[in-house]
Amino acid sequence: MNKVNIFLLLIMTSLLLSGCVQKNNFDYETLSSNVNEIKIIHVVQEWDILEYEEISNIDSTEINDFLIELSNLDFKKSLFGDRGELDDETCIMLVYSNGDFDIISRLLVVSFNSENEQIAWDVYLFDDYEGFDDLIEDYS
Image (cartoon, rainbow, N blue to C red; front, side, top):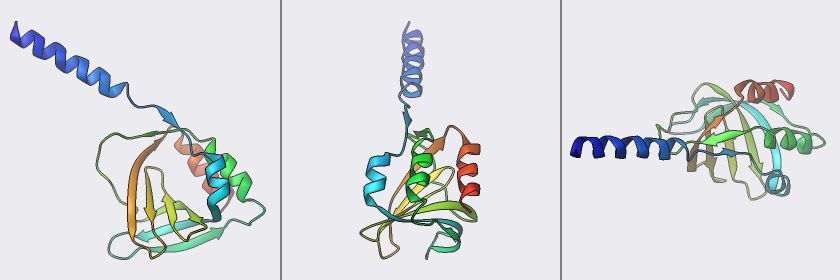
């Protein structure tokens, strides 16, 4: 009887954890009021010192359109998992009015302060990787 209870508890726990993930979007209103600059970059290395090559800088007249498209992409925020890395990856860089910036890849959002020090990271799983890649390609 004790093994059956433990088994049922494990099944219920796994159902509970798998059902907790909800779809999210970037909030257009928050981004549009705080983002000053958007770049498409290729991250060469994240560790030690962030190194990247700028592929394109989104024209100021296109920033709102870009943010609308970005906010239309659905993602799930992972509750657990390896933090991963940004090495050798094409990403989106959102630069905020205070100089802080986020780097958004297909799997991660890494936040940096204005002195290039990493301050936070989140694992994001986009529902449509092709949509993310298309967004980068359209503005590159």
